[in-house]
Length: 338
Image (cartoon, rainbow, N blue to C red):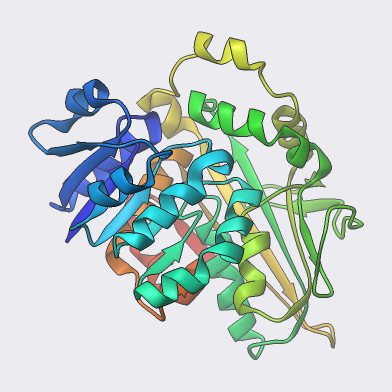
């Protein structure tokens, strides 16, 4: 399988590159900076193209089976990369966590992807995939829907901070983050939805305060589960840190990203609760180390395992939920339902 990585010289892109190399994938590196591409290529094919040059980008992607876009911030330019991948006849996934970008991809790219016979799935990440897959597992356990509500929460503890790329993505969407992002309420997207949780218990911990947050799976879950309410939450102190974005001119003063030791000290957890109209409830959780390493593993595994009807699809529509979560076990990721 031939995979093109757009932005493979960035912090997240290099982790995805390393993960794909362990799979012995045929890799083409694509980006706007020829020198930086050459620095990480190690003999692999490189092609230079900017997201603003549609024709050049289409040409750079031609011949690949799939494109993994690792070049954030995604909100200003991610859709252009997706459209170029579709035009080149490639499946497309990305490592975005930006809710408005994800929503835009779902709303604007599906018809073209269907005509091209390709699958497009944004947010193939630690933040976008476990919650979506868990929601599908829980919905099936509760009879397949409709559901009264699906509530999902994220926690990150331990070592390591954000990469510069993540900081820039956050800086570009800080107003969305501060608002709590989108919630899905009775068939409509709302920014002013009343939070349906005040606290949430994460694996190995008691209940902690949470705040409504712009999570990726809030956008993807309604694609495949009929639910009256879908909201996302993070720990309240994490939400406060995300809301205090670093000024743009200060980002370059930070390290490019956490080092390997710091990443391994980090722990993430996702908890999903699903409730039926008659009050039956199921809960699922997933947890593991290293958010950036987990994203690399999910993006690589996802690129190889994509299968389903062409178009823009949620993770649970193109990946077998339980089997895919099981496949992440070698990366230290566990999951359970109750």
